[in-house]
Length: 199
Image (cartoon, rainbow, N blue to C red; front, side, top):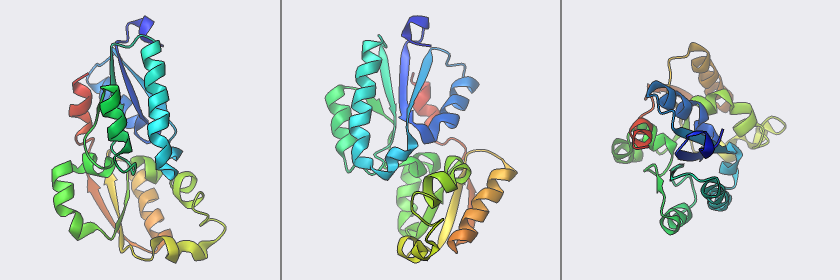
């Protein structure tokens, strides 16, 4: 479905946020918004995110969307995404990464010094732990790499967007496999809802 089907706003977002964005759009009856997702695996090469977002913006404009929102935080681009956002005249959700905007950016940044040895999971990362983290890092074939990647971490903090016992188990299992302590925090959709409500 494109802009010609009465969708006036395009949200270009990380695939890791697809379920959450669709849930917010549905709950708030934002039927004029179309979601277009880029691969979550771009996070393994964050320098490629701005280029992929630029291409998606160009396509959305070619398809006639009147407004474009970017469902990415900085996500490890080191400010490159913000430079693109300014150049293109579009708006992105605030914060350095989704862990911050799910938690509340100001409180997350204030607390970060106390949790800088934590590895974070979201619902998406708990669900896709093997295909997005464990496998791509080679831990499935070379578990000895665990200390290289995670030796400085002390715990996994699972930022839960939903109440899902199955995801709780997956997140806890991920922590066990990484040899880290486990903590669960219920965040809901955090600042994502307010961001999408401007559409």
